[in-house]
Image 1 (tube, rainbow, N blue to C red):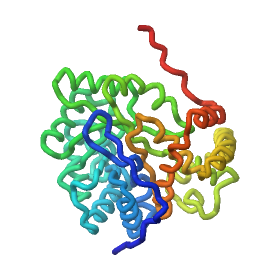
Image 2 (image 1 turned 90 degrees about the vertical axis):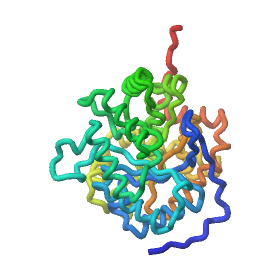
Image 3 (image 1 turned 30 degrees about the horizontal axis):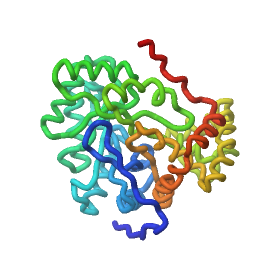
Image 4 (image 1 turned 60 degrees about the vertical axis):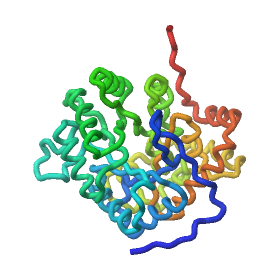
Length: 350
């Protein structure tokens, strides 16, 4: 299996940011395997998308033990091996919490216990064909496991060379704060990054709830769904196109999205997206590029994780970097007026 394609000469140069207060640099746009790799996208297309991403300077690839029962990790690992990429030239992450595919008994194959974090990570590394992952996330909080146990387990994995940094995904600010308190008390490493949903339509947590985490701990964001599953591209404003994934796929996520179409919630979102179109046109950009650039405009975002089932989608994501310098204070204000959802700032009492 091979893939060769000349990178378009008009693409902007990739940008890199530090992952919070760490010394690790990641491409500001990254590629994830959620809902795609190992699932409805054939392996050959996965290889092509990852190769295209690598060629344009994307160095960060994200997956999870729960994506397609581990198949996403397997195909990503196969791709890395196939192209013979040097281990020090890319950053790869995985996430632990839903590992039912690791065994026959669901008991202890999920959550953030020391047992599952260690065994789940080893199983992920085996599927990836790697000795370690650069980033390891707690893929949702586990409120049945003591925080100290979870923090100690992540530090064990760091100390044994299975990962370099650990973080959280969709944890609330109080939970992240508690993890840092435990780490400080035990002289251990706390979470460096959080992977939430963040886009023009989902803002509250990243722009308000986490504010003190950035200031106090230097937490970085590596958000998923910057285009809100394609809604912010504008292609669903008039319905679900027959050739779209939501129309053709039978997986649970696609079904759920299809069921949302026509609801009042969907109509409200579509109205906002349609109102963003003139702003994108004025900037000479597509709505997808505008939405992606808007996410990485946030200085707390180290890397926005995007998905791609076609090479062209990879190249198009990179074009958002051309739009980024055009997002002046005036343009951002105009966008906020359309969205009408800018979170109120935190009120400081001291």
